[in-house]
Length: 286
Image 1 (cartoon, rainbow, N blue to C red):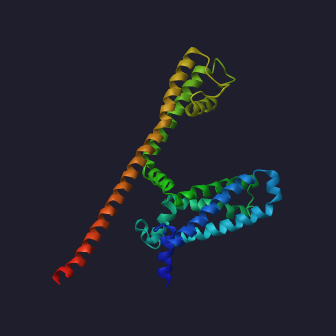
Image 2 (image 1 turned 135 degrees about the vertical axis):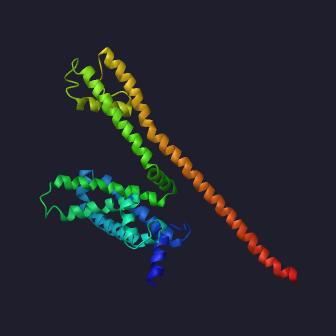
Image 3 (image 1 turned 90 degrees about the horizontal axis):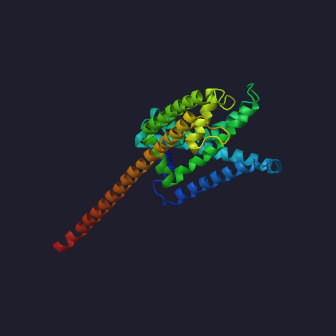
């Protein structure tokens, strides 16, 4: 009986059959609960609403953490049924520490237990504990489990992580180099705007993301202006590198999915023809 329950739980949590009623009900319930949690997170930033409905938010948090904890434990329990995580112990450990969504599941609930148990037992700053509540937004990422599109993006990021790491490394090197150049070109001309290389680093990060830098921090020397324009252009190009990697990965993933669907269709048609031939054979002999 237990193996049957385990296999059924694996089918539901892995969404093996999207048309299955139990699968749709369970996953729809989890999606609605996730959206309610995210809405509650933002509503609690309104002080009057947070105070007026403090008990409702507290009970919602307790109920949600209980549900997500059970879900996480069930996913760990059935993980060894996945061919990628075979092995009752090693397979589950690989799932817990290598699967992106499994890590997200843990991050979504673990801060709650820290917040409940640590403040009264360890001399941690309460502000630091409250900051952990930001990780509740990780529950929004859990929606990737219930959306084919989001699931595709997660798979692409996982497969392309090495190339993404290379692009982020290139961006970091460009940021450091451009910040150092701007510091040495502008420090003497405006020491109050570029007092140290960290101020130049902030300018470089803003230039990389917006192309213009801070509105009140900009180069004024001829060399600084020329270097700033060139470096800002190069940094913008570097920012586009991860987008190209992810786009190429999505295209490859979609091709794989399309080929898999076509192969399944051909297999289904072949099985139908074989089955029809078997039924036609005895009739001819008669």
